[in-house]
Image 1: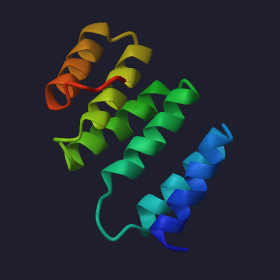
Image 2: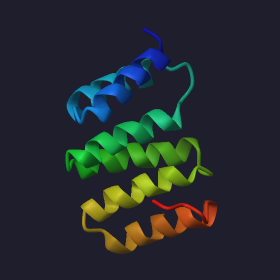
Image 3: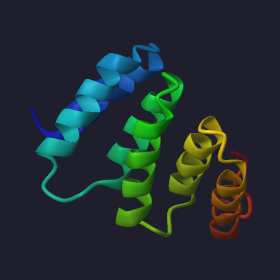
Length: 107
């Protein structure tokens, strides 16, 4: 399967709140992707956050913003993971960065 096909299956599993399965598909999509894809790391980070696995979520969120430092949603993922880890100042900083990049960001 292609990275896009794995991503679609991951998205489907995420919508069904089957986060462990979604993680598997996003991981396969990351492996199959020819170039690093920030959205795949963001999606997997969201799954880990949903499972309260904040350390893993933070690793993926940080990889997401490393790949695309101009994408506000990546900083939302960093903020959510840091909030889950009770790193409130860091979370606030990440959310501020997201708003700096996208002032209309409702998240």
